[in-house]
Image (cartoon, rainbow, N blue to C red; front, side, top):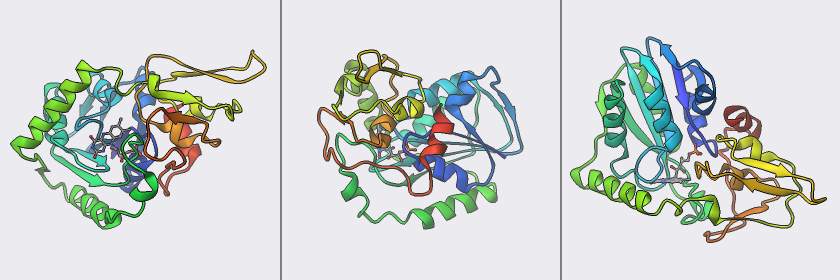
Length: 255
Ligand SMILES: Cc1cc2nc3c(=O)[nH]c(=O)nc-3n(C[C@H](O)[C@H](O)[C@H](O)COP(=O)(O)O)c2cc1C
C-alpha cells in the first residue's frame, strides 16, 4: 500500500502513518519527475483548507497517475469540513482518479487566525477511536464516500469563490517577523514550497518570503523562537505540532 500525504503541522502525517503503508510526501513527489504509481491499495491524506483541498494536493491530483483497484482518502480537519470530501472525490474523478472510500477525521485546528491552539487542545475529539474506525474500514476495502449535504457543497463553493475574489486573504502579507528571529532556518526547512530564504548579509537575519505560499502555517507553528506572527491571530503565543510527529519528520516531508 502506498500513502501520499501533505502536512503542515503533523496531523495528516500522524494519520498517514497509522495506516502502515509506504509513505510518499506530496511536495517531494511533485519535485521529482516520477508521477506514475500503481499498487493494490493507494491512500491520499491531507488537511481540509477552506472546505476543499490545499493547492499543492490539487496540483498532485492533476499531475499524478494513480492506478489501483482501491483508492481511499482521509481529510483531517479542525472544525467543519463543509463539502470538502465530495468536492475532492469529484475533483479526483475529473482527473481520472476514482476514489472508493473517503472520510474525514476531526483533529486540532491549526488555523491560527481563528483558533487558539490552547483551547483546541481541550476540545473533545475522540481522535484514536475515530482513526481506528477509518483504518479498519480501509483494511476491509469498505466502499464509502461521506458526501455531506447539498448545503455543505454550497458552503464549499462559497468559500472557494471568496478565496478567488480575495487571493491575499491567506497570504504572506499577513506575516510579520519579530526581532527575536535568529536565522536558524527552521521555517525554510518546513516550507513545502521552498518559499522562504534567509538573508544573513545585513549582520542580522532577515526572512524573505516569495509569492508561492501554501498558507499551511508550518513556518509559524514550528519556529523555535515563535518569531513569526500573523498580523491578526487568536493567540500569538500558542503554537502547534501533532504529538505523534517530530519536527525532523516534517522537515523530511517538506524539504
Ligand atoms: C489555510 C488553512 C485552512 C483551513 N481550513 C479549514 C477548514 O475549512 N475546515 C476545517 O475544519 N479546518 C480547516 N483548517 C484546519 C486544518 O484542516 C487542520 O488543523 C488539519 O488537521 C491540519 O493538518 P496538518 O497538521 O497535517 O497540517 C485549515 C487550516 C489552514 C492552515
